[in-house]
Image 1 (cartoon, one colour):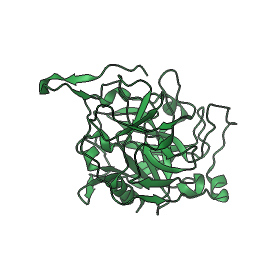
Image 2 (cartoon, rainbow, N blue to C red):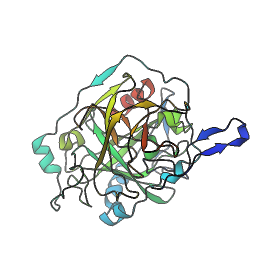
Image 3 (spheres, rainbow, N blue to C red):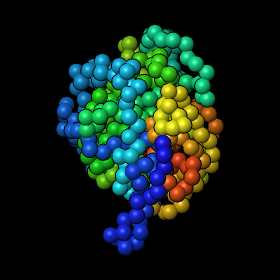
Image 4 (cartoon, rainbow, N blue to C red):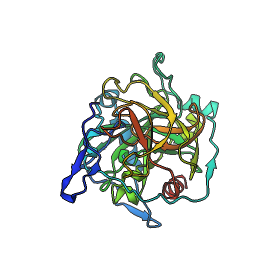
Length: 335
């Protein structure tokens, strides 16, 4: 993805920086979204918005995403134009961690589909990390996501802009393809039955809260967690920690076909206009929604997602701070 300069809102006289159309390092971002046809949005607790998806539409989503359509899906990083964030301190509650869920060997074998042998890549596929495909505004897009531990054993974390316009409508034909590599989805696809986002994102487009969760159906009769495992999650943690981030960057010099990773210590937004943190990373459009794990490797607690980047801050990926609001969104999805 080619990074451009920031847009300055001169009408406000203060030169407030906004996210430029191509200033997003991590991307299947979306605007001009088509309304969800299956149901109207419902709110929960005033802070969380969700939408349910009929079984029929979930099944049609699985059928829709052929390998050809997956390959042709856009990384819509330019559609984040004009988004800004809240500089107010994110509400933080008591630090919390929820341990992960190991895949069930029998369920994993049952869920796997036939496919070619995976190729050697910068990162070998990780069973619980995958690509996200969805439709918005009549166009097909791609993001990244991760299976997280949940009471329903069927929850995927991603960026808020990977399932909702922010502000605006929710996506359609939303599916998760774990361990995707070079066109091969060894566990098949898991279609969303519910999409959940904080209202700070879904109603306000606040990039500080750019996280969403999808509840998915089964594949081959197996729940997502049993088939591929599920990462532990952590909320309200100390800032400035060491992270490992994963995703499927699709814009040059990447092609979106293999899993990539970045590692480094997090630092605050240098412009102070969001509460997001940045880590050293040159991943490009398509990696949005990929998980950030505390520490090294993919077996730690997830604590953020790939969200955006600034054109004037070279090779830095920003992710939202997972405080109480995002924790509430997670609780709504997992239950």
